[in-house]
Amino acid sequence: MEREVPMKSIAAALRRERGAAGLSLTEVARRAGIAKSTLSQLESGQGNPSIETLWALSTALNVPFSQLIDPPRPRVQVIRSDEGVAVASAQADYQAVLLAAAPPGARRDIYRIDAEPGKARASDPHMPGVTEHVLLATGRALVGIADEPVELRPGDYISYPGDLPHVFEALEPSTRAVLVSEHT
Image (cartoon, rainbow, N blue to C red; front, top):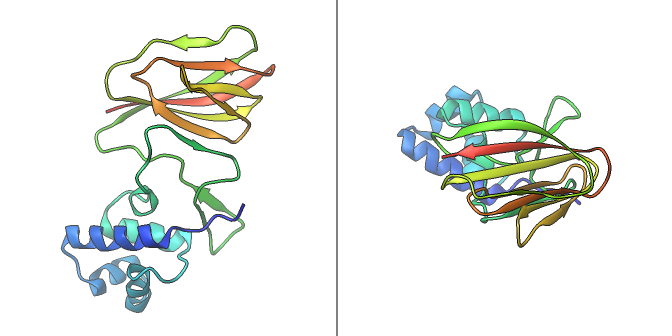
């Protein structure tokens, strides 16, 4: 599946963040080391910025990279291994796909999960405001809200409210995942 940079969202984010910083097009372009005309095009939703350009702009605006490319997220989100917005490098065969951005003031704990088929790991709700993020590395698993788990394959990602009953059930031997527990 071809993944496109969400130019409409990026354009709105650039305008929003530049306005919040109280900076002119000229000043942001100067700080980022890009042409003013390039920034103007990006803010109008034209062009296809490289990862380097977006990083330079996020640095110039003093905001996290993810704040420029992360659209609003639904309560439960699944990103399959061939989905998501990829931002390519202009310098190498390299691309980055943002899976999740941390809200301001959040704490994130990262775990490696090793699971085998059999009994599912059922979790009671955590503290209010907890969100869990799972990226499946190997095997297959049912993951998510207890009454609506989603089958994941290697490379698939899901996020869901950790303050609801949730489950992780390995469907194949040697299932491995990365779990991030986000506390706001």
